[in-house]
Length: 587
Image 1 (spheres, one colour):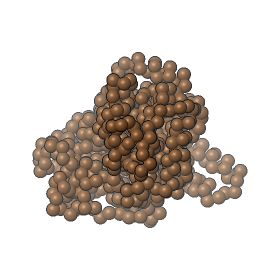
Image 2 (cartoon, helix red, strand yellow):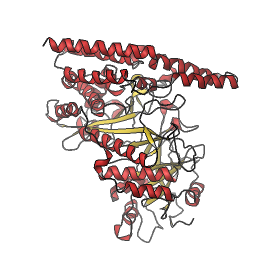
Image 3 (cartoon, one colour):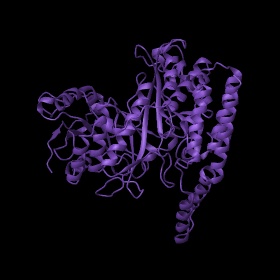
Image 4 (cartoon, helix red, strand yellow):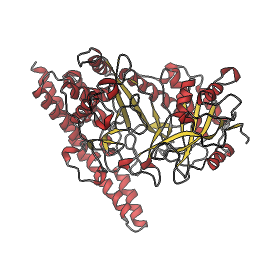
């Protein structure tokens, strides 16, 4: 299949570094000129996606897909650094130094021809940057990579997919079933605390969530392609039918005001991620509800379902909802950035302000107490730890084994200065899990907490004390919440967290959790099936280290989600609710 391709000079050029490009036409010599040409609506369908392709050390084709609505979006897509988890790519970085940088910028790019994508899409060949972020790693084979992209005739939208997209285009907004969050007033209270100036500044909490989920077939297995049936790995090349579906999802939620950064494949088969572009906390909760409703409705049209469960498969990674966060002033300045708030303060890594450091410390001091909001199911606790999701109550740079990660690679010193909370999952009430993040950070600011030292090393390989871990069972989560609440209120009855999470709200939320656990509606891993799976492996092979690890993991899961754990969770919830009832009755 022939694709019109635009070549640039043989010089080592990088779009991302602003170095002039030649060869697109006589005048296109910069990323802006390239984007202006591609986004010229007078020449046909306007560009709507940019696909950045790259390789890891294993030579597999990988990609990240970015929506574009403007020239600035396009420039950002082809010039920005995309931070990728190197520990999820073969032979790359360790999990405690996991951030690697991917950027477009080599000499090959073009437009996918009609039939390859449902929307006008530009591809750009990029690569993994060297550690100094000034050049590309030597294993980046641009010529071979582009040849695969250009010549893959199987990478075409089939007739059935096109028909499904046509049907979806006629679905009205009200048919998506977008819901309003029951606990939206709680998040409104948090937002008001930042806006009223009582903290010494006026502004907004800014949130950027990363939604992870599985597309599922009717038989309960994950799917990466209805037609090819092939599995895709981390940032892998997405089959055309699923690519078309994902593009439609992003276009549709964009119509409803949701701005996304990108989409890509996650680690497990059938697992995808949609990170939402950072915006204010209240708007973001609404965006999350819109996105989930649209994803589910589109999947249904394709004969699929969506699984948001934090841990649906014992042998595969679970799904999280990492939360990137910062605070901006009403003037739009990032108050986490030292240069925008207190330039004389020598903050963490030299780039964070005192506001940021206090926020981080407050979050860490309360993350175990408020785990009930961000990890709200027994299966939520299964996902934490064991080389998958961080249970270590610590803060680190580029280290995915700590609850708070500082993703500073490629961030610069201003706009991108932020933190990332890695423990939440998408089964939470979005308004509450955002509110717990922000309120605990504000708790640190109001108490002027000292900066937290950075953690180093892979926590999964360390002997971390129980005090420094998130709770491992839902019963413990409930008990920690109640004890943490008592401790805060004993110190300061008017503390900001318990103003936000008042007794009536907490009582209502825990009653919801109790009903869910009692009804068996809360998703849990099928421990009996997992045991049978392990037993079949043991009978067929030598019981090697991997099988023993799986068997031990199944045993641990039973302690978290089995009948005894369920009974303990119900008892803990009933006790907490009774205590809250007594508290309300005494007032």
